[in-house]
Length: 300
Image 1 (cartoon, one colour):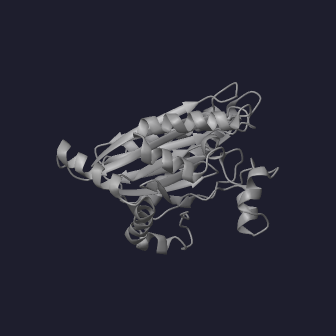
Image 2: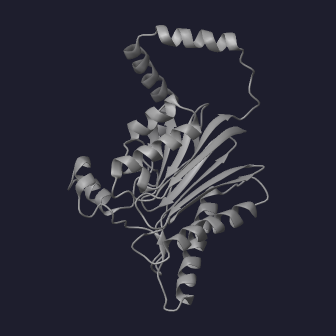
Image 3: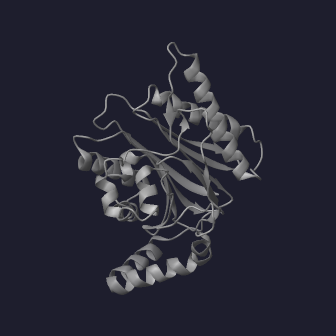
């Protein structure tokens, strides 16, 4: 399995960075993890780091390909939750740190993910956001109930309130688990904190990913997100993986690449865009049809 990973982080207009993320690689796959420590709680960065440390320990202890991914995700999230609670109780005075959590396992070309809170996972195919996690937040709850519109979410006074987190309280969080998705060449898995997705929409992120190399794309995204949200920019974190292949790549000659570029340049852009969308819908028809099942994350 071949892939490339990129990551970027900016402090924003904050005094400390409470985001944490990591790509944890093994011979059987790679686990991407991101946590956004809750700024309204003491030691949010500790909660996010405990998530990363817990994920790394549990995943690397597997010793083989993961057979029960849902069990793995629950073990990581709930173990991290209890470790955060226990750590907070040992402080003097006691504190109640918390964090969001989003995890994605790539194994044999299949992507699995789970999340708690409003940190997000996206799957982009040729710049199109095929899947996105649904936030555990107050404004998302209002939207799902039909009480506010998408545009009203951005300016709602409760837009920063999340309904699920790890840590904070003794009650275990509700975890949203996704069914696996088979990735295709060039697909991008992107995990990010709300410091990135709040100032940028899905289309902006997709356009940047489609027109720049992966690491440059992430650098451009975080820079633009910070600029768009100045002077109230949050911590901005993103980690992404571009899937290349399950097999060794076939060499492509410069002549073949140049021919492909010339053909692309001669295409009608409108017809090309329509054909691309139709191709994506066809490729993902089965997955999109399944997104309405109970625990499945929704695609955009």
